[in-house]
Image (cartoon, rainbow, N blue to C red; front, top):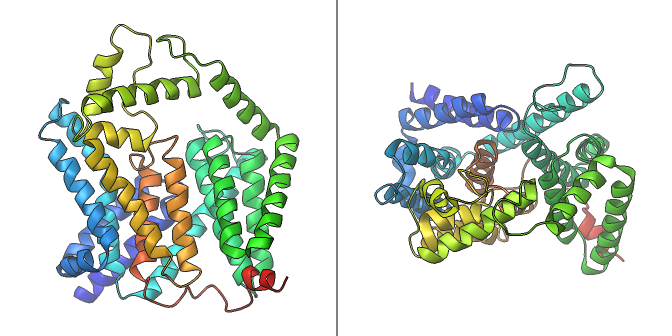
Length: 406
């Protein structure tokens, strides 16, 4: 029976990774099953060892406990505060998934393959909708909101580019996937956050794969590619021009900002004001909405339950203590990535950097799909950080080796 629960827990993790890019319902279902089988299999007994051996898991757990403490002094109704706490359950998933996968390197390959397959499925559905093969959904040419879609397309381009570099047998297949993901985010998906994450991940890829001399050439090529896409894609140019126009037209006068960027700037300024009033422990879990409502009373600022910036959101709720733990979570994961075998460490860097970038303009830890992505994929890579590199990467001459010859 224990053997069955162990297999079921691994299957649940793999299934969760597949559904993360396009289904919140199935992601919630299988992630819950993973926790259930974690208990039934007895893997929870190794939790103290996990927290000792994985500092990232410990910090994630501490941040979640801080959210629990935040319930005690939150001005929000208990039901609202608990609903807010539930949004951050991904902080629990990270150490639990590490506990499930610790010492099981084979599960890591399957989990990552499953996530990539989910991203490819999302991309194919998007193209089918674009060309009228299947009807468009309520989100347009995607199964998910455009911010979420573009984010996962940027990740797909980054991960498949690494596979292109390291795989000999399937190199051209992964090259086609990379180009298809770039085409999707450039000509189909309107999400600006995905475009930003794509640029950041592109720069990260250059630093990971090329020598310093080649990095300069790669950045120039990347800049030229961005320029070409800007002038050839109305999807990109119109979204960027709109963002620039909204920022230029912004004035912090309550009631004057109703654009996407204008509302965000209003909320960011309000967050700084709220943080200055309670800088140490903040307003408590779920306290942002209550505090912000009081601050904007009698003004024309748009009401919101989160400011679309995870750093400011946590800072207002949990103060500088919570913000420190959140930043420490990213820092420890990056620190560990620098000591991991390649390409595992590079992929973990991509997970952290993409999440950290997205959190500048959205509350990604608060959001279900991006939050699950960070918790599960970071855990999958961390859990086997002492193991050999992923089996689907073939040993061979990578871009860095080639570039060093020049």
